[in-house]
Length: 186
Image (cartoon, rainbow, N blue to C red; front, top):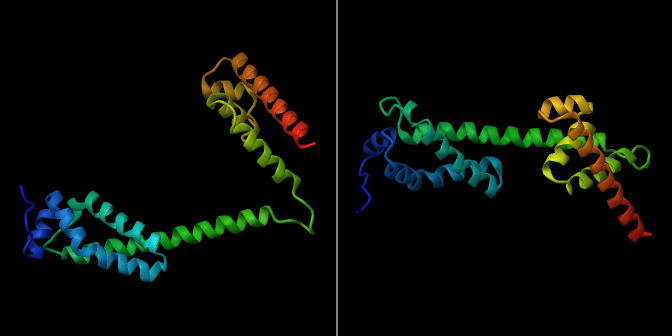
């Protein structure tokens, strides 16, 4: 069975709006290069442009019920979605830069002094990664969210004694791990 051919943009637009997957493939073949070019020129990055192109067609397909071929061509509608996706990509980049700058400020070395809190947090995080999922979650709640044993028990719907046991065993495992690392590094 061969795929239907869409001789005219109007037929393609109607089929796309109607949920015809062959129309989605045809629309992608026809307009993905244009959308990719718009994204690449704006973002200056091939990988980001590929992501945006994919996002455009996913968004278009998911919202195809809102597409009205009598009000706009499919190409115009896709370009409109592209503009939003490109703007979102720029905003995501800006947000990432703000977060990285904030983290860099927080981790900045003050007058050449090593940030021991940051190093200790990295060591704890690495040690927690070696625990089983439930004990790791209990420890994260205890250390990062500073929850009491009772609060953890309530949050996870566990008996208080179980929470205390997880914390005690986890601390023992972490201490033993650090002792082994200290002994091997000395």
